[in-house]
Image (cartoon, rainbow, N blue to C red):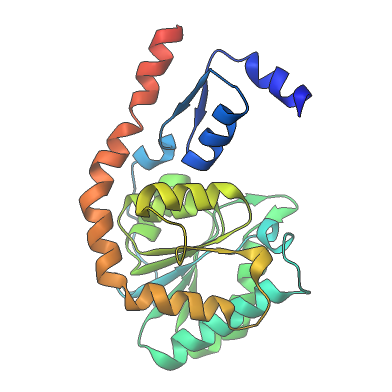
Length: 242
């Protein structure tokens, strides 16, 4: 709306981290916008000792957030989808599962739904719970996963930037835009939480990622160095206005 546009025009510089938002801003007439990757793609990783049950290269990282659950259209449908996914991984593969929180704010703590999942499936010996860590240490855990299921944007960025095949359970356009810029499309790479209708929707979406694992990882390995390097251009843009 006009009030928002007037506010946005008052900034010297706006960095849009994905093309869908960038194109919307340009279409609305904003001139002070640049399209560059999120600086989190440049974040260093710190590899802590892995807990028992976390098998490097054969563990599925799973992130779930209260925020994404709050955007669902069906009663508790997101949590039910995560249950079905975990049960499918346990029944159909030898992969381990690591439950990885990424935001632990009061009233918006990823550990709350993740601990519920852990308590339900810990008896299988196939599920481990990662506790709160700083962002570099969390990236270290995510980087050593075979796959990542991410509800938080920066959990997905940690995975993409370390070339881990990733399925994003998205709640806003930013998830679609980041995936589109990396893969050329967000189809199959982003599952909007608002679209969850059946309890096996997430499992079915993950099946596609699993079947295309090698192609996804090869693509990330080939394009991610240059994509990550572009995030450094934010510094050049800041120099211009300073």
